[in-house]
Length: 346
Picture 1 (cartoon, one colour):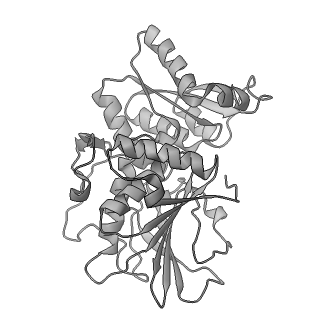
Picture 2 (tube, rainbow, N blue to C red):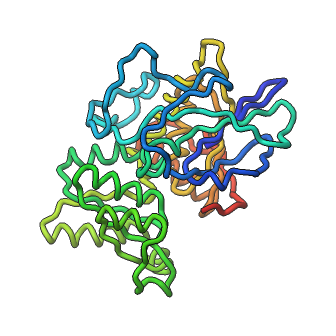
Picture 3 (cartoon, rainbow, N blue to C red):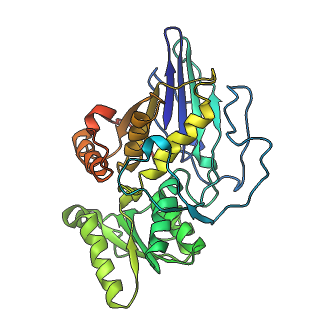
């Protein structure tokens, strides 16, 4: 995710990292930047401040005693500006190490008076795959509250969301069933131990492969429902998480992210304010949480989404469904700008 501060004399951007550092090195940005994702393979408890930017890296008061909250289930209190939304979550699990710091990114050849900052969600926890854990904090709290004994989710063969779900489920002593999309040639073969598959197998996830053709024809919802019925018939209590964790409940993870950014920016105290948030869009939940959070709060940033799959119209429609689920009372086309991304980044 990228946030941008613009004024008459300057432009400030902030990029949230959630995938691989090598994707960022040496890249050149226009004045309106694009989101990249950075790897979650990072030290598990790093949380630090960089004073060279804008004294907003650490939102925790220095006088506060350290607390060990990882894996703690606690009551959820929404930001006051979001308290009227529908179905406020009752609880949340502490699965990530938040707040993640904000660092300035010294890129060459930027337009004059343009600054780029990175929201370091790659530091949210070593095994939990960067920004994906934000949605899972709410989704898995709901799964436990419903008495689930296993989790089902679906995605690509190297889905970071699937990896994060498998690891988080293991922490909570829940079995995890993954439906992974791959090529027709490989669907009947052992997927191996490369990348996220290694982590998923290390934590004991059950893996089913489906071809891209079947995925497109049948759809992710039908595929997960078939597996759900199978597990129910076996006496299990499955909980289904959609692609990318993107449903109305999962969006609360990014409503909270806006609250976090607001606290780090120190809005109202003479600190830096970002005018634009630019983020990749793969399943829709992230942009809905960010955009509705910006719209309801006084952060005032415009959200720009670059669609890495499907087209902007699809994501406008899907986002609208999530907003309606929150009873937000706003059109997706009024609070987010979708564009087709011309870059494919793994």
